[in-house]
Length: 401
Ligand SMILES: NC(=O)c1ccc[n+]([C@@H]2O[C@H](COP(=O)([O-])OP(=O)(O)OC[C@H]3O[C@@H](n4cnc5c(N)ncnc54)[C@H](O)[C@@H]3O)[C@@H](O)[C@H]2O)c1
Image (cartoon, rainbow, N blue to C red; front, side, top):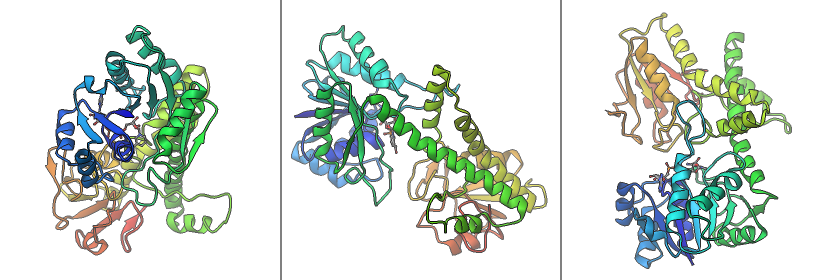
């Protein structure tokens, strides 16, 4: 059976690496750089081993391509392309649209189309299906399904195999075929009654995180005014064995999911005339956190950052990955510079970013830890500057939220 996976990024390549153990997988990506690298057996994604890609390529069960006609003859096509926001913070459906065009123009028989890209409820039924039908002049009767991706890149304990996977087809046959496909590499499949339930569940999972992170970030500001430790207070609340889930305060949220997905839910709520006040407010609170942190650092340093050398430590949006998408470190750095600080950053995992390179972990007036990678020694952070503000709350002796 031939499976084509459109988009070979975090999601698409991860799926490809698992699916190639059983199926002939074609990884289609419109980035020639990504394709060339993959065909040389080099993975560009954390959590996908280059050796695995090279092994499947050698066995003939995986190949990357940028030629859309290579998806011809597929039995299943999986869509795994980005779903960011437009400049005016609306769902940017242009990548899904382009993937639908690729399918419509190249698929030469009835197939199962599975969407893994995160999008608003109704995407499979009201967007993908009608678009493919229109662009292919209704040539084939395809099956359609959704199975939202839950992969957390860089995570060791949960992966494709042991993370339960939701799915739903537009028809019973589509559901059954979707189940067959994923059951070769996922231990627990959970069928829901409609694609809209699966699409909504995915958005709600990340909205739940966005709202709770905002709540704890707001609480950190209250605790500071109260003159108590937010961390000690949260640990105290966490001794309750039921009805409480601990979230940690931070510099905000980053990555492709948490800052973006809730806005897809707010978008559909708005279309339907339903309220989405928590989502909007949570987004604002998290986006304001980097400014609050710079305010705190400025306050602690005599009310002015002019001319002070500041080292921002950890610019990836979370520990142990090189992913800088939507990282709150960007707002922290820009705000520090706006206030006259001379800013460098240290993150050996990221290395190069925005035309700058990672600076040594030493010699600053002020250090601000945004993300703490495991490889960074706490003692080295404390020695890097006489004043250290640690937004993660992990470094002993540092100022914190
Ligand atoms: N990264 C995650 O942790 C994660 C987790 C769950 C869900 N998701 C969702 O999965 C989807 C994909 O995210 P990702 O993180 O894999 O993105 P990514 O940016 O890592 O990868 C997307 C890939 O698609 C390629 N691409 C873009 N348009 C294309 C087109 N028209 N045809 C072929 N290739 C194209 C890009 O070159 C890129 O390599 C998004 O909807 C995202 O919200 C991501």
